[in-house]
Length: 90
Image (cartoon, rainbow, N blue to C red; front, side, top):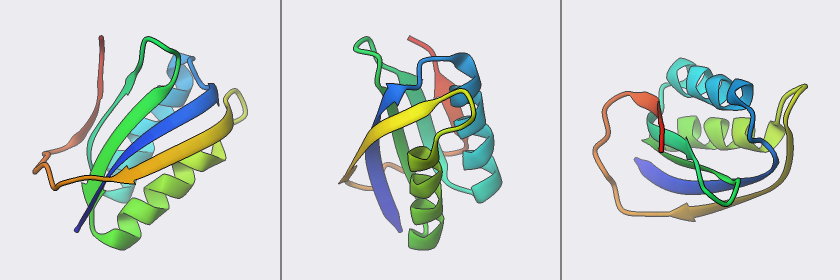
């Protein structure tokens, strides 16, 4: 099992990108959350088996038609024990 805290920067503030990440996280099978930070970055905290976490990290790096990812920083953190994968609203 692996747990990552990921920060995504770029043109990623729109609701469609966050919804896309939520859908992909559920589809891939990682657990955790994502949220828009006050500085415009998106924070994603995810955990699961190594291959699934890597797959979701690749999704975070890819962007979409309406979201351009400039940088992704990932930090391995302690296991959190999340259930599900959802968007947190500030």
